[in-house]
Length: 172
Image (cartoon, rainbow, N blue to C red; front, side, top):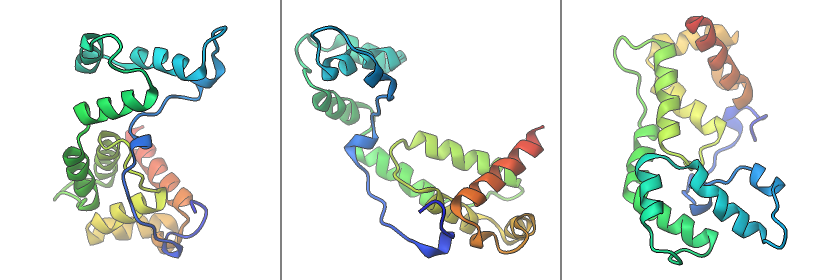
């Protein structure tokens, strides 16, 4: 899908519990003799936490959480309730370039919004469409010129890379 032109495919966005906590594939490379992989993953999770999240986990009664699914559900309900997720996703979908905001600043702001809404399940194509349609006409034309034609005819990967390149040039 990321290699097709953006106008070629649409899909529905839906949040999933699996996307809210991800354990890096590194966890699959570790093993402890006579210990199941599920237990190793549970042991590694606290290493990824800091601040309030770490305190929350440390203060749980021992034996309260025994499986990865229980941990994921408890963590999400405490730190990422559905109402917050919905609000963050709505903000992303309603993205609009601020007055006098540069293309670089707008793209960096969009990326920050995406980071804050982990598990948004938006494809690169969805992200690029939302971003492009939220830009003012002048900035859209700048992207069309930079794309050597109509920006929307680029594949999501090409469009994303074009934005990243323009931002890197601006930041350098």
